[in-house]
Each structure stands twice: as C-alpha cells, then as structure tokens.
Length: 281
Image (cartoon, rainbow, N blue to C red; front, side, top):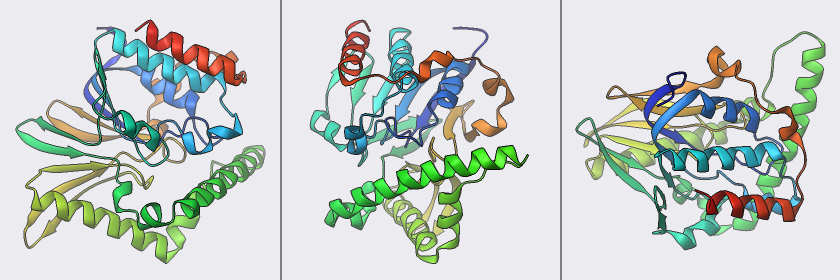
C-alpha cells in the first residue's frame, strides 16, 4: 500500500455525473489519488448516459475511469450499482470480472452491523411514471449548473466565495425539502422493517448522516451526496462511518492533476480509451 495515501476500508461514491458540465472531475481525481480503498462502491449516476449525446466528455472525465481501473489492478474491489442516469447498465446486473461487479443493491456486514446500499431512484415517482419529464428536468439542471459556473466566475472576480444556485433553490422550495425528507424517511422505514443497521443511498444529491427512529425501531440513514454541488463521499474505516467533504480536505486539494486532462475527446477516442482501459485491467 502507498504510504502517502490514506487507507480506507470502504468508500461510497454516487452522483458523479461524468459527461456533464457540472461534474467536478478534477477534484474527484484529487480525492481518489489521496486514498487507498479496499472496497469502492459506485452507487449510481457515475456516468450520465442520459446526457451523453451532447458529446461532452473531457479527458479529465476519462481520467476518472482510468484511475478506477487502476485501483482494480491493485486489488481494490469495485462494485457498480447503476442509478437512473446510467440505468442501461442494469441490463448487466450480475456481471463479474475479477474484482469488478455490477449489482442492483448490496448488503454488507461491517463491524457486526448490516448495511443496505442502493441508489434510491426506486422511490422517485417522477422517475417511475414520467421518465421524459425527469430527463427534461436533468437538462434544466445541467443548464443551471452552467449558469452557476458563470456566477462563480463573477463571484471570484469580486473576491467572494462559491455559491450553488441549485442548492439555494432546493433549500428554499418547500416541495423540494418535503421530497428529500420523504425520501429519507421511506428508505429508513424499509430498512428498519428489514432489520438493517444502516441504509445508504444516493440520488438526491443531499449528503446526510442521521438516525431515524420510529415505533418499530431505528436505523442510521446515510447519503453520499454528489460531485456536482457538494463534493462528498462516505467512508468506513476503523469500524465507523464518516462523511468526507473535499472542500475540507486541504491535503487532497493540494494534489496536482494533469491540466491537459481538460482536452475534449471525440466519440472514437472515448470508445477506444474505455476499451483499452478495461482490456488492460
């Protein structure tokens, strides 16, 4: 194990949205370069296949794929749980190659506790019944991220900190707040009924660690957040879970990445690089 890297037993990432303007691929790469995980769980919406047709795939996004395949070659177990934006991968549930496998959900036994992990879009009524509306919303969200990039550029010129327009909107709209609360409580109630000690989701881009108590019992609800707005992940080490936040990690922020990684790739280069990476694992 590389002594310069921080050891972690389990890392849970979700909602990276590779292939969209909002993905903070360089910062995610810095984080991944700072750790040595034994198990990496990719809990949905890692590659945004919904919006892949826009042909936005910088080399920095490919660097994430390359780093993960590099982890596989070093013995890290990688589990991919598809979400709604990469749902086409659900056709390959059960696939296993070396240390890599694709599953719909995962149940782990960690520190004598049962952990239930899944993406969470199964609770989204819009996803289940109006997929076209959900996709339209995704395009609008990506447009908002572009506007956010411009707003942050201006904010930086004025000597102010970063702002998140989408987060401000979510936090101020009562229906959005209620949706998040309902999502968390639904996941927790099902976990309690199945006697899980922890339930871990993604999907709603809302990092969270809280205990939910009902008349039937209690469970720890965890959400790994995202790499569009919050830049967060869940880590399990020394028999406990913690919320990782890149903006608080000065060590990872100092890691240098190849600035040429911003070069735009065409479809042929994307396909060739992906094939080459998986063939050389």
